[in-house]
Image 1 (cartoon, helix red, strand yellow):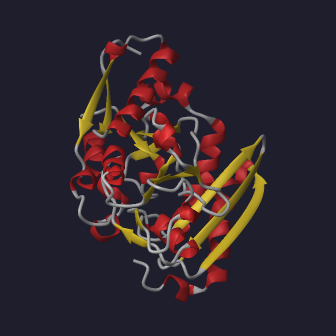
Image 2 (image 1 turned 180 degrees about the vertical axis):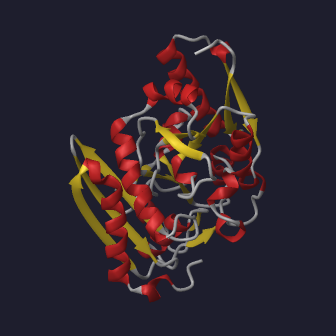
Image 3 (image 1 turned 90 degrees about the vertical axis):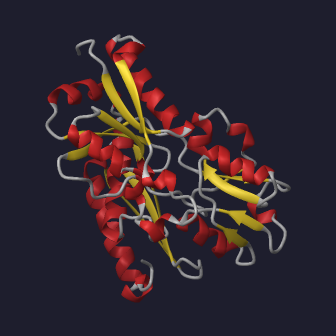
Length: 309
């Protein structure tokens, strides 16, 4: 690589910047380059600016990526760093998710103000969440709980919790760990009973297809097991919906040349749920995810999906 600046595009939240800094550090270590060889370019996205409505009401996951992807296509940045769970399964022409960094803890965390465990919240307690998946799971286990829309970055949500607006909230373990804030977690949720979003905990790098210089730079950062697991999870998501308009969960685990996957779909009110599991060769990861989606869709019946979007 030449010493000319490589421009890394990212959202401006503390968590997004932490992910960009981690990417920069790994590139520095891989290629023996100084920090000055990289420029972090922060951008505001529609998803960051719209705080008063659920993403499902205003356009879905793409609201966190459109401006950044436009800059990538135009050549204003060289790569974009994202949280994989925020990425739609359909990307703009000419772009791809070229590299996945090694995954952090994919599980959800509960942060309680007066109780440590989610299940111990008093009847009628108020919980903040903007995720349809988490809302459906909360309603499944505790239909008595009142859920309020909780948009904003990690720090904003924790401030609202501390000020007593809610009795508890849910965040991704990975994000809290990357921010050095794992100490706020009062309970780590069981991924079998409370499964995570597809891609949760994994940082992905988006780049232009066919850019050989960037491909060579990024290659040392690719983590095989994460790449395989995400191929399975995103195939499952893509075959069912691919946006943030539906409560879908999925988690794949890779062990050598084998992969195992578990997925779940719920109605938004949490009253109906279907689960699926699958396993096979790691080389068939995407096929396994897509087949699991087809089987769970058949088991649920098309009426299950009516009114979701």
